[in-house]
Image (spheres, rainbow, N blue to C red):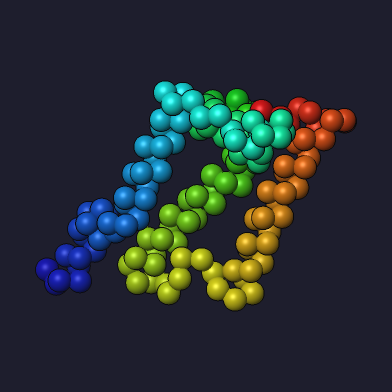
Length: 142
């Protein structure tokens, strides 16, 4: 068997130590927050009385850990629809970067700027919408 084939057949954690440690650490934090072992109050909410874009996120993770996608949707739809898939893409990009398949973890140039502005813009829009006191918007609060 050639050394290239052997390298591909090794366990991912051996070839991806940084990505593996990022996933394990993030998973452990998500597990602790999602199960409610360590309740973490939102500093933005404590200061302003408003929901931040991530309010309800730890309870959403807990609902996902229990397999309750509907409850997760009700707790923080934004995090479920945008941030969970984004986390998967970031892990994939980190792994590709660590394996030497790509030069950067985040797209460069126009695509990277557009993606960054879209993410920040969606965070701002979600925060504003979920804090509006009229119409259907109060239902978006965690």
